[in-house]
Image (cartoon, rainbow, N blue to C red; front, side, top):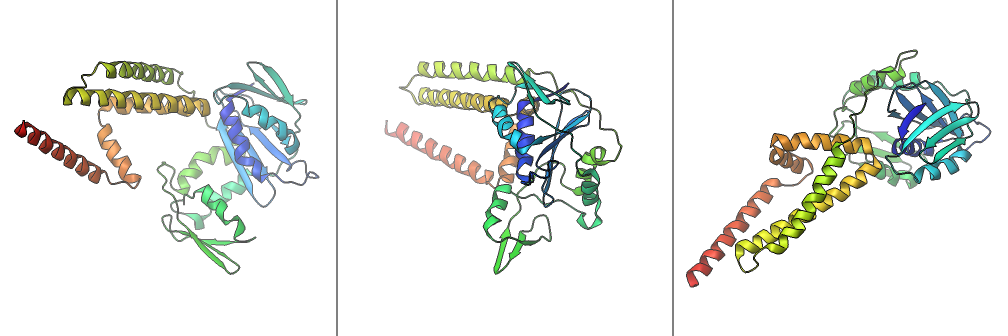
Length: 334
C-alpha cells in the first residue's frame, strides 16, 4: 500500500498531462506512466517531442510498482480527485486489475496496464551531466512561456547568462523574456543532479524516506489566530474614542483583528492545497518568530521583491514628525 495526499497526486497529473501523446495506437504513450520506487511516486508522460517527469514523496516507505493510466481513464480520474481536499489521505495499490485508490468513503479501481515504457533515467541523467550546461540554471515563468505559442511553430532560443533575457527567434519574429528571481537552494545544475541522482542512477536504491513531522503546528497556529481575531474585535469596542490615544488603540485593535483573520484564512487555504507545505511553513515561521529577527528578514524580503524599505521607513518617520508638529500646534492654541 502506498500512501499520499490528494494534493500531491493531483499535482503529478496536472504537471505531466499536457505531454501525453494523442496517438491512441501507442498505449504506452497515450497516458501517464506512474512508477513508485518505494520513496517517490513518479509521473511520466511523453509524445516523443516533449518529456515530463514529476515526482512526489510518499508518506512512508512502500513496495515498488508501475502502471500506465490512459488518457481516457484520466478523463474521469482527474475530476474524481479534484473533489477531494488537498489534505485527504489516499492509499494506492497496483495489481492486474489496475490502480486502486482508497479514501475515507471507500475505494475505486481505475483500469491500468503495465506497458513497456521508454527508458528515461539515462536520458535525463545525460542532459544534466552534459558539460555544456554547466553553471547556474535559468528560472523562467511558465505563464510567460505560454505567450510564445502563437509566435511560430518553431522558435530558436539562446541565453548567455542566468540573469540575462531569453532570446527567441522565429520566422520574421524576435523576442525576449526576462528570467524570474529564484530564491531556492538548487540554483545550479550539479545541485539538481545530486538531488535526482538516486532516481536516475540505473539499478540504484532510492534515498531513505524522511518521515514528515507529526501534524500539530498548523492546528496550533490556526487556534492562535482565531483567538487573536476574537480578542481584537472585542477589545476595539472598549477604546476611548474621545482621546487621541484611545483612537490609536482602536485602530491598533482593528488592524490586529484584520491581519489575524487574514492569516487564518490564508493558512486554511494552504492547508487544504498542500498540508505538508503548510506544516513545514508554520514550523519555520515559529522558529523565525522565536528568534526575534523578523524585522531584519522583512527588510531583506522587501528588497528582494523590488521594494524600497528605506523609503517606507523615511515616509513613516516624516508622517510621525508631521503628526507631532500638528499635536504641538493644537496644544499651543489650546
